[in-house]
Image (cartoon, rainbow, N blue to C red; front, side, top):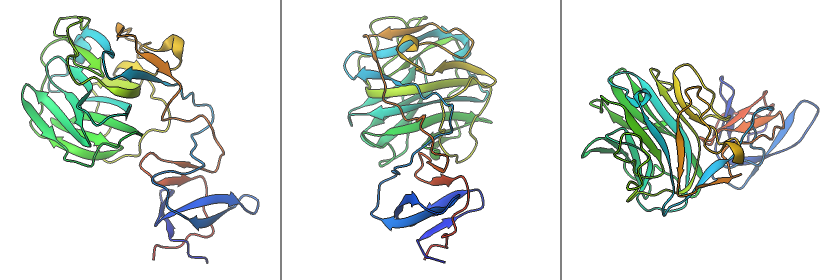
Amino acid sequence: MATIGARLINDGTLITAGSFDETAGLPNKHRITADTVFADEFDEVTTPTGYHSGGSVNLNGVNQRVNVAGSGDFQFGTGDFTVEGWFFLRTVAYTRLWCFADGDNLEVTGTSLYYCNSGGSIVTSGTGVIPQNQWFHVALVKNSGTVTVYVNGTSRITDVSPFNSTSSRPFSIGGEVSTDTTGQGAAAGADGWLDGYFANIRVVKGTAVYTSTFSTPIAPFSAITDTKLLLLVANQANLLTDSSGTSKTVTNVGAATFSAVTPLSTVYNGAMKQLKSGTLQVANEFDEITVLS
């Protein structure tokens, strides 16, 4: 056996000491050669065939955000819920990823993430959590009374005394939400404008979609049970279409635009896919696999 500094664990994930490239080998096999280190990158990044990747909403960081009208579907109370999506930030300035009128908000400054559960109550992840100029997945999950905020599938914030919303409320992505009952007011968004992209926003009321460390999604989200908002950003014509089945009223504030930039790929070579966590998942075994030295 050739030692390449990699180990295939029993769930099909390949753990590598450095990085490597895929080259053509014998039929139905792959030859792996060691090379220089790529930071969470792999040339053959793929997702299964048939997935529609869509695009993203491009926000200018000045006066653009997306508002969703106030709804009882966003009144989570003490129950389980999940709010998640993909983001790409072009600046280290203070940014609101999303905002409700009273709590359950996620904000970023530099490389730090903040969970604002209500009023002045804020829990931080510490530095080095939010990547710059690259896509990352974030999920705010309440499970049995405890809130966990995951970044790229890893728990970064835990709050055992989280906010319990008690009324219908609007929702905003990329800026401060309006304080009126519909969420359509023009006065909001005074700070925290998002300079970058977002895609695949999903709100699920009644279900904790993630309860432990997970590999970030490789495909666009689906309207699973209890989905109350689903913005797939499939194309220009469906920039703000709610695909949850609840027909939410979504408003484009400041004329945000469609972009083909996306964290998801429709290209598939059948051999392997790079998870957003940086691990490589392979379709079948490698003959050259040995344990890490």
